[in-house]
Image 1 (spheres, rainbow, N blue to C red):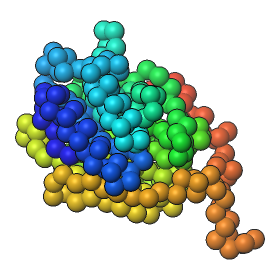
Image 2 (cartoon, rainbow, N blue to C red):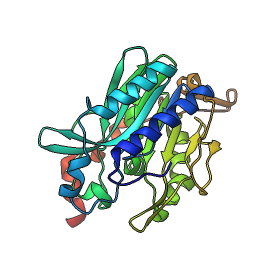
Image 3 (spheres, helix red, strand yellow):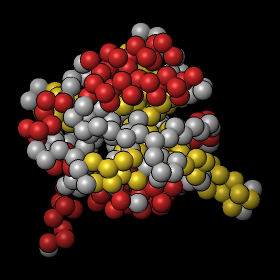
Length: 276
């Protein structure tokens, strides 16, 4: 969907309306873009602060009410205020009085838009057990780091959702990267991007759903607002052993890992090795 920068009330109303529309057509999980409640292209933290909310604010209350009304779950991007810090976050909201089930703060921040002024996520990755399966959350630029999706897979995720704001220059992420993330982790992936133009930045749509083989099973256009529906086999993410030819061509992208060779990925010293 398109977003009106700085107009939280209108964005919230439209999120609730679209959540209801999607749920009426059978959606159990409705995913919205990154910063969908606020807009993204702020020029300073001071400009963005008036539109930030706590996780228990007016928006989460309104979305929780809509989830209870429809029976659906929702993932909604917003700018979170927590103490003196501000985060690019995504709330996971559910029905039946559960309200806010979880909240994810974007770990990897590009030098772009409001991310230039926010604090990076400060909590470990987490997977949420929902009535239909196990769901993890990344946000936008997180998908450029294979470790983020791998961490969620190792925690048991059957589906990774990705609220995002892809501008024109990010076209390779929906074109190539997400399919690789699904395939290399044998996990389903669902990305919700925004559309429209904000302060000269054009966003490319192309929301996308990918299965555990890395195949695209649904993709939106670039043309404008659109609700993309997809039915996902979450259980397939647990069948990690792929038998192409029994006894001759079998792979398991978890069992075949060799973590003892990967330690340099998390070693603090590796950050400075390029200068040695």
